[in-house]
Image (cartoon, rainbow, N blue to C red; front, side, top):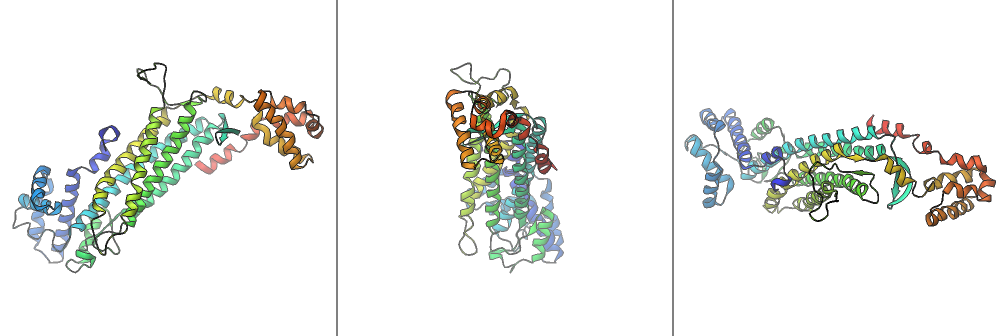
Length: 433
């Protein structure tokens, strides 16, 4: 990803320097295990660790690869240049390139997942803070973009919190599923390497041995991982869309923070645009874009092909770097988001009292009116509010049939806003415990 949408902590995981360092650790730990089994001399295994503090020369590895056309061989050649050809002659004993590549990729994805979990935690913390801050802040709920019934801004934040909590669970599961390694040799039979080597390497790298690999780790694990990233990206967009809607001039119930010196438009100085949440919508598309290729990587020829390789070299860094950036951008937006309670009430009262239509309908049925008749009585008065912007309660009080069924006090009783917020604490207890 371009630096504009990247955080250095995540970028570092995917740098060539980090990749080669992981490659080295896998090879060195494998040598230790081989020496413990008596397969290679202990002195040779110890010699490999001389490169522990070495700076692997990326340019030199690239130079070798230009000739060998094989990245792992290029690295092993460079490692021998550092350690010594004789000392390094048992490196990669019984292994195949995928043992290194696949195990490394999973180490990187696990580390990326840890950063993503921290990002989700920051988003959840921001949403929880704002939920409690606005637990009782009334706003109109909308269905199909149309005024429905009263809710609170706190419930909106709490809903997004619950969604992110589910995403956190999914990401933890995806992290666990991807945290496997394979040092099983060509076609995964351990013919030339003892399974104990795999167990040792995985333990040292924070992974579990893959129960059965071919020459590659099964790609359904990766498909699941990237699918979870796609779901999280969609949840980010879900929050972003709500904020974008709230910031529309006609709505203006909330808005992104507009900093001192910020400019909204090169042409119109009055503009305050929801640029951060619009950006999040775009970034979500990029993350989701990686899901289908990850799923298509599951089907490989026989014990191995490399049709997945080019895909993963791109989507691994791109998806995790983009999502990491998006999570922290969203957290910042929520943390500093402006909320306008007075405008929320103003919007709700734009069609005075109309949001209480269902309560009046139910009251009429409770008073003995059939549902069909009650619906007709409420709707004819509600439509006048739509068309003439008159007060709904006043219309009901002027309707003889409604008054006959409910009485004036019965009608007025249906317009208590507290009726719609009486279970907010119950919902919060469910969400936040």
